Length: 628
Ligand code: ADP
Ligand code: ZN
Figure 1 (cartoon, rainbow, N blue to C red):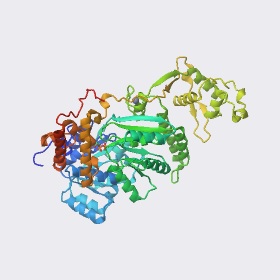
Figure 2: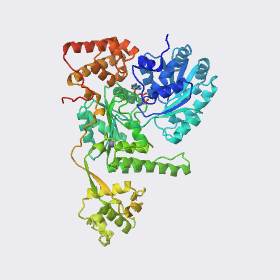
Figure 3: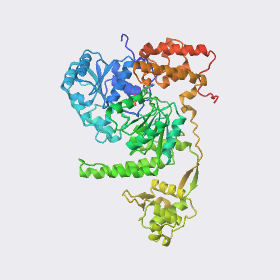
Figure 4: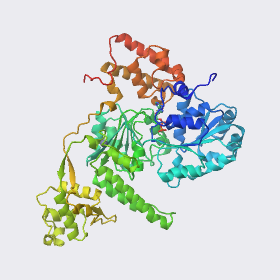
């Protein structure tokens, strides 16, 4: 390397980025000072750079322990593209390939080696590790070490013995996107981190727009969304294989370039479909939650959930696969009351074989709680981003003005007196009935079942007969959210009295937000406008040309297009229109190695465009007005 580069020079030279993101620099500096480090950063925040930059600057090799084969492959491809020698060793390689890789590694060919945790026990690997200088061991997806985490992997426990067996203790760094306090402590304790530098960056992903749609005709919504965003890549999650198959079929017959993924497909098909998606041959994928672990595709513009996931942790992880490149992206959850029933049903049938009896009740309670949190997200009329952040224990401020609920138009209606009638009814009927009977009584309905229970003898029978049923339903779910009522968890769920003490105070109001039916205004704040929005129509034309060139190169090189250059990088090229080597290196995401490989072809394309359109203005200044 000749002259020693500093961290920012390494970032520029190898990755083509000008500055560090929040948290990265302090992590890198701590590692370079030889300190153990634990970083909790949301998906897309840029964790990889935090260990890749120091790996390049430390002597010897960095071992990265990662649970997912596809993730390793993606990372290694990306690193090699950036001119960094890296390799992976996992079960996708044959024994002789592994031996060859280890031989090359022993000669110092690689700076970064990705391994699956199981590998740490293999005698061949242990022999190799004793021969080379291992400066750092990085544990990716570190939450896998905790039994309290979502995806506990017993093989992660092997890491400690392995590190102990090395003649010189390497620096340990651990990274995860999801860690509660418990899991964070587990990681530090179990990995035996020494006086670790702990960094927890905020969980907010500013570029993501959250939206919940309470609708029945979900498929229609998806079709029309895709028609409005034909060029975008997206993931649609369904809870069952059956839903995946039928939605895929529907989109396919509509001519959408779509593929699918679920555990019922054979592994060949799964692999092929996943690659079609990653290489943008089929930019839309319909999948169960079996899909996505280790998918690093950075240009996913939307993630739509066709069904409600079982927990916020799952939702945030799946939705978080949108917009890893930092570009504005949308996360939509389609919700219908049926989702709650299906989820309850699934939990009831959960397989508990092998679980200690005393744990079963605990797990059931935890699952029930998680489902309630998720239902709350679907039903809340407040800011969705704040709902998520406060669930993850972050302080929240004013509504974000960048989510579906913040942008929805609604009127607030004072329903305090109606709420009191509902309470009277539940009280009078001694909490024996479910939502539909309670509604029927209040509305004074004449149904056979109501006659059977002699509903008309109740004092509350018909007291709200002037009211609209849908509004009363909304009111009752709001009252459940507020804790005034609760629904029992068993199969014949009934409404019971919750904590009504606050309502006894005259000043307490029950306010309901009623959404207007008209299309909500979605004007994004200027700071969050899509970056292609900063292009003029001429700029967009150039962007399309550069995209086509990228696709051609990706096919030649058998690489996913986003590994050649991200959308963000192409947009920056359109804005800066570099004319030469120096200009090209100023573009965000163009490092030395990438310039060597592709720089000239992009310069040529831009040059040709400028020649054809000498007067063209390609971008709109940040605060300018677009002419649309
Ligand atoms: P994570 O592992 O935290 O989910 P990644 O490491 O995959 O995130 O990074 C997400 C994206 O952000 C990648 O495309 C990466 O190249 C990009 N990125 C990371 N750090 C920076 C930076 N300092 N400047 C610009 N882009 C960055
Ligand atoms: Zn909001």
